[in-house]
Amino acid sequence: MNLRENLRQAVANLRVNRMRTFLTMLGIIIGISAVITITTLGSSLQKTLELSFQSIGGTNQIQAFMQYNDVEDDEYTNFEWKDEDYITLEDLDAFQEAFDGRVRNVILESVMGDASVAFPENTSADPGKASVIGTTRGYLENHGLKLLRGRDLTARDQSEKKAVALVSDLFVKHVCGGTSPIGKAVDIEQSSGQVARVYVVGVYRFDRTQLRAMTQGEEGSKPVAEKDISTNILLPYRFVKENLNDEMYSEPGVSNFTITAEPGEDVVVLQDDIKNWFAENKWADNGHFALETWSSMEDLEQIQNVLRIVTLVIAVIAAISLLVGGVGVMNIMLVSVVERTKEIGIRKALGAQNKDIERQFLSETVFICLIGGLLGVLLGLILGFVGAEVGSSVIQSRMPEMEELSHVTVHPSMPAILVSVGFSMLTGLVFGLYPARRAARMSPIDALRYE
Image (cartoon, rainbow, N blue to C red):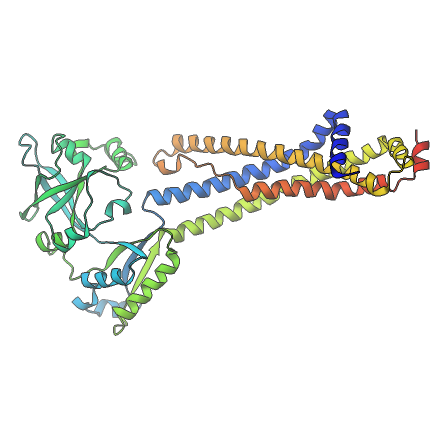
């Protein structure tokens, strides 16, 4: 009897007792669905975290900062930093050239403090408040901000120290009166009285999560009127250092900066290469300093590793129910062997061999477990989707500030699905082997006499 005939006969035999067949499958369905639900939720949470990290700066962002190597407090206190100890802009230019193709942006950020910012064309509006930040291309991407109109800062803006700026949409709304400021002048007056005129080249979208927190007064703070919110005005780093520098914020060089790796670059390997480059090219003769790095990828990998372990442990515990289902399958097949003793005797009398009887019962057992496994996968996926939606609703209602986690990305685990289906078939083979062999070894004479 070939495989096709075995399967046809198995389906026919199982249809005779449909309710018993379904109840036999139930243990397999519950076990598989539990595994698929858990792995789907675990995989979905990992994917959601990855997308959330990317939305708040990306997993390809590396924070770099100078570190003093001598750990003795008195030595650190008495050590006098020299101008040449700091990283210079020329050092960063050389670094970026050396890592061309691996590093997309080197982002500098110098916060100059609050200033009064006026839009001369709107004479009816009072000057607004803004925090002046000297920065470079990539600042918006690094902070998860979106450019609405105009363009971003460019490398040419830096090299030529252009008097250009990016302003927020809130600044446009309340200081510019809604008029597009692209190409128009903005006057910046610092607390020292120093005034600089710059020209707007782009408008970015103010962080809506931060806006909601400030206007609603979350975390015990008082609500702030939208028009009174101080936003950031972004200028080229070199222009700020030369034209708006203040002794309070002055530094002879750069002590920290942000690196954006090219897509597909191994951030962990890149971090080691960057540290080695600065050790060899900047502080080869100065053992007091070294470059330290940190990336969100490190935290993300640690969190995901914990989630993988927890998901695996719970899935293994849930898979134990498959053993219970397997025992149920074996029990029912033993009952089936007893009920069909006369049938076995007749088939053997007509020339069926032991292997034919064994294959028939094994086919029935594997078929039960296969169908149960597929139904379990379907049920598990449904429960996974429902669980993700419930989780999203709970986060939205209980923790509205965690907006980036309130939309769980459902991401079923294909390896888990394939392994589960394969394991359910293996369960059928293992637990169906004994009943099948018992049926095959039955004496045809005894079987025909059985009442």
